[in-house]
Amino acid sequence: MSLFTHRAYWRWSAGVQFARLPATMAPLAFTLLTTATTGSYRLGGVLMSVYVAAEMVCAVPVGRLLDRVGPARGLPALLLLTAAGYVVLALAADAPAPVLVALVLLPGIAGGALSGGFRTLLADTVDDELLPRAISVDAMLLEGILIGGPALVALLDLAGTFVPLAAMAVACVAAALLVPRGVREHERVESEADVPPARLATYLPWLGCAFTVGLLLSTIEVAPLPLVQRLGAPETVAPVVIAVLSGASIAGSALYAWRGKTGDPRLFLAGFVIGGLTLAGGFGWAGLLGSVALIGACTGPLVAATSVNLQRLLPKNRRSAGFSLSFTVQAGGFGLGSLAVGVLPLWVTPLFGVFAAAIAGGMLVAKPVRAIGTMSVTP
Image 1 (tube, one colour):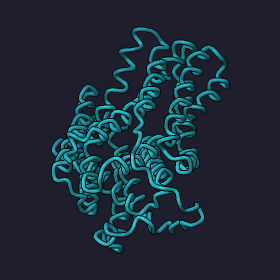
Image 2 (tube, helix red, strand yellow):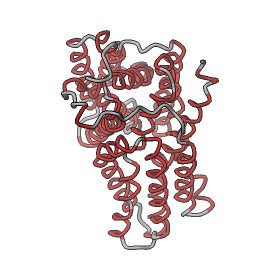
Image 3 (spheres, helix red, strand yellow):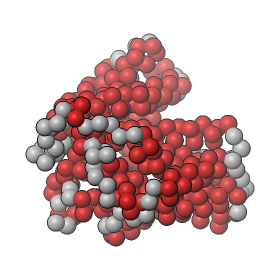
């Protein structure tokens, strides 16, 4: 079946985009809310930090819970809890800061494993042959969500300060209604003890790829302004860097989807190494835009190859936790990269991503990709 006529996939895709939308809206929505109620944006930053920390800490434990009850049954409940968290936060907007910090934990805890749960359902929604293409198309749609989320908040804020949070709750409810039903979810005939956990070394190369994506992307997405100022350009040019990154990412994912093959992730890691070194070198506009375009073009294919190979390695009854761990590792890389941008010289920060890409590539050289690609799903 062609992916573009695969009704189950597009239902899954609609659900996961609605589930992702609140997280992309949250930074600006929290900032606008606290600015309107307290006169300062700083509390919004604190709320976002607590929200992200709760997601990262709880992603794997909540993912294990999803594995036990089944993501098709557990995701709607988590999504409704997340929606309730946004509603409560909006209703208590005038409460003292400690109360708001406590309340933001609910959507953070409940939302931490949503991406892992939806990714697990994708494995039961499309056949293995369509999986690389399905992940690539999803990566293209994700770019639109990342751009559209903050823009939607700015538009909805014109109707009222609490409207963006209400829209975030509505998006969660819509995602809950769109969770795929009747997918061929794996049979739980084995007890949890029957499937021994694999050694960390089995997954480490792919977790390294996920970490590298977050680490190197943050160098660009957090620092477009200093990157253009280093070349003597005004701050109004900074969005060009993000536009080139997003455009190249969409083009790379589109080409990867058209090919429909997993590909060798070492090729994309090599692109990260070359792009990161060029970005650190500061070789004028050609070096800046060329390195950003190369990194963007390799991002979607590397994410897809990592996801496909992780699916082949993870036991079926541990996929939600495994994918949640992968997304958490990627977010951790993004956070560390953002911190590096804030405290280190600009030319140094891309080198961390280069180093991480080289290590991940080295681990994949030690364990050939072709062999990994044909391993059993049960380590």
